[in-house]
Length: 400
Image 1 (cartoon, rainbow, N blue to C red):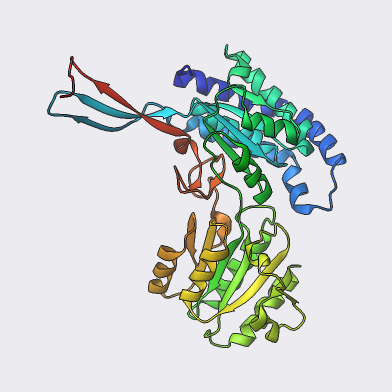
Image 2: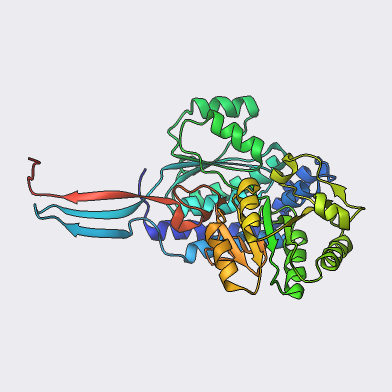
């Protein structure tokens, strides 16, 4: 793929900022068509689908932030000269073509494409049918920005309109070389892509995040963090789903009741394991082990009891999605043990899991939150959308 000069890429992004501002009403009108056709009873999906003036402001800001970041392509990672005279440079390089498959969120059409483009990748966008009108309008904005700067739109950004069978066929036998696929969605989508893709798949988007309340937790902090992590945005993959409380915390039963009351006041439906059910008889029981694996994306949470931090770590590593996990404790040694041993992309002490986000973590706009370990885990920002290449300079050397 041709490497574009930094100035050309940034000029496209400047154009895009202006075009998104000019097309606000048209974007919102296109989104209204999608909303009118959608069942709003699925609150999490509906929240993701909505595009309003604030979300358009966020899109413009995301483009601006990426434009202002350093170009990630061609950066020198290492340099060495060998005894035989070979000079070896390792530099960052584009992936090539990235496909992202996502559900509902039209803002991904902006945030994913701006990152891929600035990193000199082509991006194929496969959004959900529920957001087709919104995504089509946003693709038109991208194509206008590319044309204004002398670039062929289809060579850089394409929105794909395919049903499930057509998507499966595309993944099995793509009409062009795919270098990376990022599915953003639930377990079914991720499994579907992994089963059929012929190239690397980077898993992202699944939460099922856990929080452990240690016996030394500050209770005021605990309540504040839990309410924020659970209720601030239920449709986000960094929302909290499972709460584990140490049986040895002072005032254990009273604290369980107080926590339940606080969550009930925030309209959270509670499920309880066997131990907690004895304290909260009105809570629904956890009847199937599968509930511990489930990402809710709803005002629903499980409260369970554990004997110590080791049991909490074991349970989190068994059931969580590997996204985010939090420990509430004033004991830094306990926190360090938890953070070192819990196998998640982000681990927290005394802070809401809602901070697992590119913008909140200082990365800027993100393509996704990766829960894979290769080649990167956590927010996939601009610097993570490149691979590397070795440049070897010689003068006739041969290996003997």
